[in-house]
Image (cartoon, rainbow, N blue to C red):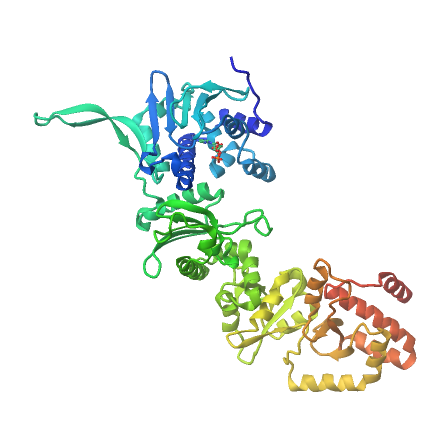
Length: 631
Ligand code: ADP
C-alpha cells in the first residue's frame, strides 16, 4: 500500500467545502476537468512547436469521456502533456488558485456558493460529485507513469502505474444518490452531451464519447437499428469565431468570468470581427470593477493573442494603450504567424494596425455607454475614471483629445441620480456671459462646496466643478481648454464675475485701507504676497487665493509626493478678507488704536484661512495662545 499523504491546509479547506457542498450547479465539475484537459493539450502542442522531435500531430490531440453505469464511474482522458510525479503532487496536493481563498476571506462571504460560482475551483470541484478520484498520468518525455488517488480530506496516495502513452486519465467514482442530488445523472449519455454543449462547446479539441445512436436499417423501410459509435460532442468553434447574433449575453459573461477570473459580469462586452487592413476577431471586456491590484505595479495589462484559434501569447501589452489597460479579452488573427517571437511582434505592422483599431473601438464603445446607460458608465467610471484622467495627463497630453469626452468630474450641479458631469454637459449649460469653466479643488465634495469662493460663485448662479482626485487639476491644466473654453480655479483666479459697481467699491476699500493691509502683510512675515479686501466671499470672513501657476491644491499634492522637501513647492498666497464682513470693520477700527493687536489678528485670520482651504498650520501653539489671549 502506498503511504497516505496530507493535503496542504488550504487545499484541505477547499476540499472539505467541495465535498460538503450545497452548491446547486455541481455539474460545472465537468467543465473544469475538460478545461484542464484542453490546457494540457495546449501545453503539449505549444511545446511541439519548438520541439519537433515530440512528433505531435495536432489532429491527434483529443479528449475522451467514458461512462460506466455498472461501476458508477465517469472517466476523462486526454493525450496532453501529462504530469511528472512531482507535478502531480504539487498540482493536486496544493491549491493552485490561492487567490480564490484570499478573496473569500477578505469579503467575509459565508457560502461556498460564492467561491464556486465566481471562480470555478478547478480539479477539486470533482469532489462535489465523486467520493473517490483516481488520476493516472504520464508526462511527455518520461517513461514513468503515476497513479494519484484520494477519497477526500484524509489525504492522497501516489504510486507507480502502467501507461503506454503520455497523457492523463481521471476516474471519478460518483457519490450515491441522495434525495436532493441524483449523481447517477452524470452517467447518462444525453446529460453529458448536454453539459459539454453548454459549457465546453468551444473547446478546440474534439471531446469524444461512445454513444448509442439509431439509424435507418439498411434494406428495410421505416425500421431503425441502434448501434454504438464514437461521436464528437463539441462544435470546437471558439466563442469569438461565432456570429455575435448566435451568442447570448450569458454566454459572453460566463466565458469572461471563467477565462479572466472575475466574479462579476463585465460592464460591457465588445465583439469585433474586422476585415480590411487587418483581419481579426477581438473579444473585449470592460470589467465592472477594478481588480484589487489594478492601481499597483503588479497589474499587467494586455490581451490574449491567438493565431487562427491557437493562443500564442497570454498577455500582449502592445495591443492596449495604458489608459485602457483595464480592458480584458483576446484578439485572434490569421495574419499572425504561430511562431512569432515577442521581439518581432513589437514591430509587427499588422499588430500596430489592430492595436489602433482596438483603441478606437474601446473609445467609441465607452462613449456609447456613457450616452446610452449613464448609470453603468458612472459605475465603470468609479472603477477606472482615475486611469482615464491619468491617461489624459500622461505622455505630455498626447491622448487628451481621445479622452476628453470620457472623463467626468463631480460638480455643484449634478443631475438627479447622477454623480458626475462631463465637460460637454458643463459647457452646454454655461451661462451666456460665462467665459470660463469654473472649478475648485479639495478632498471631498462637501469640503469644496463650503469653500468661501465656491459659495460665492455659486450664489451668482454659476456651476463649479469639484475636483476631488489629486490628478484632476493636472488633467484640466493639460487639457487647457474644452470647446474653446478655458478653465478657472475659483480659489486662485480673478474670475471677473462682479458687477462694475462692486468692483469699484472693492477697489476703493482696498485703496482706503492700503496701510492697514500692508501692515497685516508685514505681520505675516512673508507667508503671503498680499492681503486684500474682496467682495467675492459671500458670508465668509477670510480665504486664501493663490497667484501664479501653482494652486493651493497643487501645493498639497506635490507636498504629498515621495521625496518632497517641505516648502519645495509653494503656492504664492494672497490672504483675502471679506470687505463687508464685521471682521473688516473691526480691523479698520483697531488699526486706529492698537496696531499690535492688528498683527495678532492677521496671524489668526491667516491660520483660519489656511484651515478653511485644507492646508496645515505651522504654528498651532502660537495661534492657540493668541486666541486664548482674545477670550
Ligand atoms: P487550474 O487548472 O486552475 O490551474 P486545477 O486545480 O484545476 O487548477 O489544476 C491544477 C493543476 O493540475 C493545473 O494547473 C495543471 O498543471 C494540472 N492538471 C490538472 N489536470 C491536468 C491534466 N488533465 N493534464 C495535465 N495537467 C493537469
